[in-house]
Length: 294
Image (cartoon, rainbow, N blue to C red; front, side, top):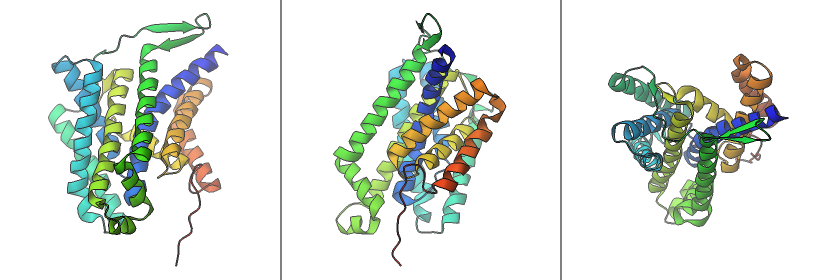
């Protein structure tokens, strides 16, 4: 029982990180139907910004987290303006190739400037451990920080989406961008806000991963980015609660497979679950079938 509870804690922690990254995927797709494969690399940039702030400026965790989020938000907007806006009305394959190209460009630019070696992230959070159930479950303070920060960010996102002017604009553009524009909504500005918010969440996830694993490298965004995309698709891409659920579900699944099976197969299990979900519910667990007028 103790082992199961311990793995649940580990799974929720990992799933929280996947959920933060998946939210960026699902928000951008919900607005402009674009799979932003560079999103995982923005997550990597957030980790490096947090690393630089805590290492060279001796900044504490919370200020470094906030500045990393703001920096990634700006980077996300610049990427949208420079790379995605010019091809917004092009074919989907053009958008897909552009997204992959942007991803590779960010990775190799970072390797040029910081080299490909793995760096050790500073231990900015005291690694205090809390024993539960007579030591059968060990709760690390890092786990608590990650889970609490993820919950707070998700609550803030839900508030922005449902209770602010920009959130209402995002929902309107997601439903029908042309009708929203006719109603006076600035679609370009709304899309930029979407990239900013999604990139900020990815930046936060990057800092949290650096703190959790104590190591970062320029290619660290590839696998978590792909896993977060899987989480978004499982939950129903374009649906924010679905991305949250998909992230937590995928984190728990990977942790349980590693603990009770073989860690070598955790990626295979993740893709197997994705295939099964797409066969049973092509629009994801939270998705609904939409009818198109012809």
